[in-house]
Image (cartoon, rainbow, N blue to C red; front, side, top):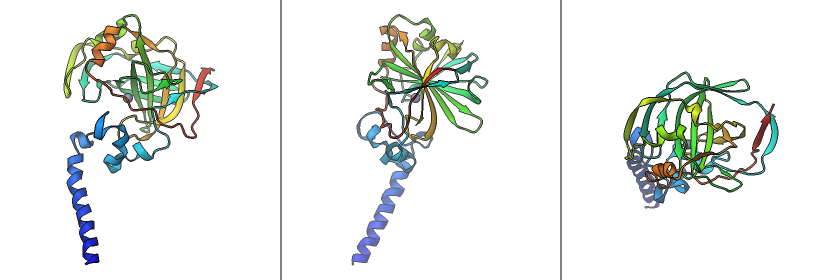
Length: 255
Ligand SMILES: [Zn+2]
């Protein structure tokens, strides 16, 4: 009887797994993660085997940036071209996919810009200070390694460079807007491109590690109305800061 029960429980577990697998494998093979509630960040790691880094990883992002060590570092060389401004509300953020041919180079490493998107409030904090929104410019090198440039957005004067993006945000999940114009992501950067650098992860499932993070030190100002146009669509789309563990944060000084 005991053996039968054990067998039954194993079968039961197998059945539960086989039933939950398709249910979890939602759109594009991703589990239905979210930023709040039962599928919120504290539960990501348990939602699927592929997401386990979200709870077990020791080099996770975002982080609070405090106590960075100043080091002579190469400047990020931005060589961006314009791309067609097609905005996609994927339910988690508004994302703009970038046409090929735009790059950053840091030292000897060259990464191609793949897309940019936003989080609100910011994911990274500076000395525990959050910002209204954070822009992520996601790049990939020839070996598939990722480098993300993060830019912190705060309330201030209206920002004309961000106008085309923030005036054309698709309000509903799974919708797209073709703004019928081009944008160069270089105009979204602050003039001072000095940065904080550390080794981290994707801030969304599957929370894969090995992401080279560059958070620009200088925030960008947008008007209250511009920030509200994004915050009116998404209430909260940021992962909480993660433990630093044994990592070092590098504050780049010009070489
Ligand atoms: Zn992001």
